[in-house]
Amino acid sequence: MPWGFDMIITRAPFRVSFCGGGSDLPAFYEKHGGCVLSTAIRKYIYLTIHNYFYRDRISLKYSKTEVAGSFQEIEHQYFRQCLSDFEISGVEVTSMADVPAGTGLGSSSSFTVALLHLLYTYKGESVNRYKLAKEACEIEIEKLGQPIGRQDQFAAAYGGLKFYEFLPNGFVHVEPVIMKPESYKKLEQNILMFYLGGIHSASEILKEQSANVREEDKAAVQMKMCDITRELKEELEQNHVDAMGRLLHENWILKKSLASGISSPAIDEAYERAISAGAYGGKLLGAGGAGFMIFYVPQEKQEDVRSALSGLREMEFEIDNSGSSIIHIDRDFG
Image (cartoon, rainbow, N blue to C red; front, top):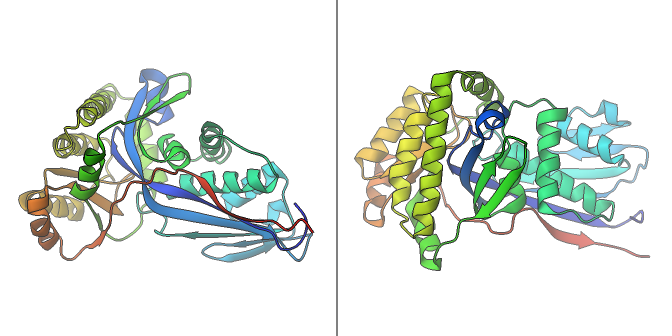
């Protein structure tokens, strides 16, 4: 890439996981296999790169600003790992996002996928979606030792409403959920998202969940969640969109039993208020403890649910079908 005025911008979507979360943890899928049904949403993380004036340094701008003289000096572990792996320096990289990290939308994996896409593009190399997701998993789980699963990386790379199957050998089968156009529209209209506030430590909750699913009774609960996930896929593909509410509820009741930090009295109270007001079902997004909740609510009950949760901020739910994307390249060939 010539030194000067070039800029590349990539983006990757955040995700909403409906059913099966936790079965993508190695402690579970390596023994039993797992599956998750989720969708990417039209909320994104954006990353930009351009050549830095000081060619012997690296400038990074995210929630803080860093200028490093070597890879080892970089504080941000994801930037440090990826830039070191690609041996890229003399650049300025900036990160910004539509939604804060730690809110249950898979932000760390969206960041990693968008960063890999950015660095491959900077080096003039194309990369397919599976490779993006697979390498993001390797960075987060193997190189950085994060106790997380594999669904978020694939959701960020592929986008859309998808069924992901995690095979014991590590392969991830990606299958789109096919419905009539009016069914996608109904799903978007009937999912309400509310922000509970706060951020959570997904790693702490997932460490406990990973340990727990090695126990026979917890593994049985996780297998029931996989059964619910497969049932949801079948129902949606038959355009039975309202089944989402019932199955979200069943999945949430089971998920709460997997680790101590998943729910809280405040979360349970908000959930009960929504159900009493007419929601068919719902769940907390992400590992648990804080962030966003979703509810499946028929049109005629939505204002009642909004009133019941009037203290919480609502965010529009829209499905993203693009996945990780290059959205700008400004190239000066001089």
